[in-house]
Image (tube, rainbow, N blue to C red):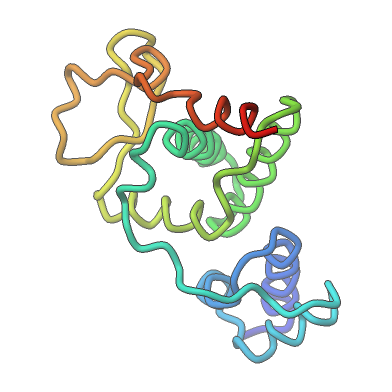
Length: 174
């Protein structure tokens, strides 16, 4: 690995660190060693890197609220595919854009972590999930790849009856 390539990979790794990405994902995306990345994490943030099992089920992305967040991120990522960014750079740029879009709403919580965003892209590449246009609004949403797409209706056009229930229950408790 050339010195310039290694420097570029280190810069990309720092972008992932700033977004609280698990070391295993950074190592896969950059090719840098996990040991080096753990040291980088501690030196850059003053904290240990996040730990835990990576998401492994596509079902989470198909639930109503997570689907809206996942679809926003996926569309941002697809739009960045026209740029000259590398795949890891597109991932961090799309995730930063996702966070900036959520910042526009006062009560919006970040449902999609960087680990989930990365997993979503893996599911889309392996054709488990896909972006499907809603037959009513024509916006593209994440759906199961094996599901017929000609009558697909998004969660915005056909809001489930339980939508907003969680928000109301929080208000009732206070």
